[in-house]
Length: 239
Image (cartoon, rainbow, N blue to C red; front, side, top):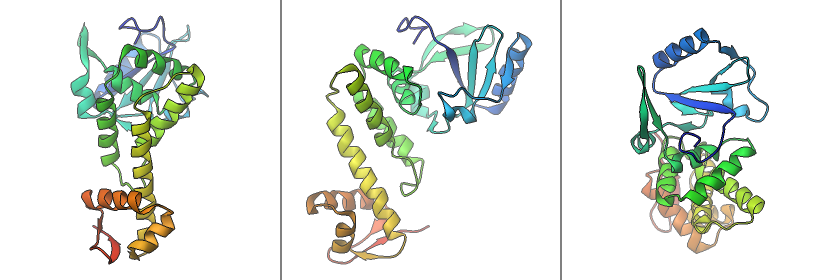
């Protein structure tokens, strides 16, 4: 954001690399110019446990990630494709992540100042379809039963951003519907892990109206996670 002129300064630099070999080489080079590795993540971001954190005498901090950011989001092919080249710095080809992907990345952190950055990105203009598509991709990488609901993470941050800055995000309602659908599907799978269940019993267990429950079943069936015929038991697929 600073390199694009969207904020005046930053307290740290986040670098995402594609391999452990590249990360080791970068860390070695940073240590040669005065940075030291610290094993104490800042209090405002416990999610940095998967980063190599380097600091120098004047307080500058660099967080080096490999593949996964903040132990949550995978740096996907879509994120790579959407990134834009900033320039060649010696042997380093530096690319900047898209506004949409920065917005999503900041939704999984605990730092309060990231809300201000999210507001700036939102006001610059975001393509909601890109953000929601990336949520779909990230969710597909994990078991829905035990995985994280990315739509819910993002929704919580949107609500927090709306409350703090007194704004309204027009596509929040769509995000709510997505989060509710995936959360209900996750709860259904957890229940079906215990054994098959009649459709009506499963609906009552989830406390859903018939229309929304039908959407949940259709979603699970489309994903190939359950099998059932009308008026029969719902069975969770295995293997």
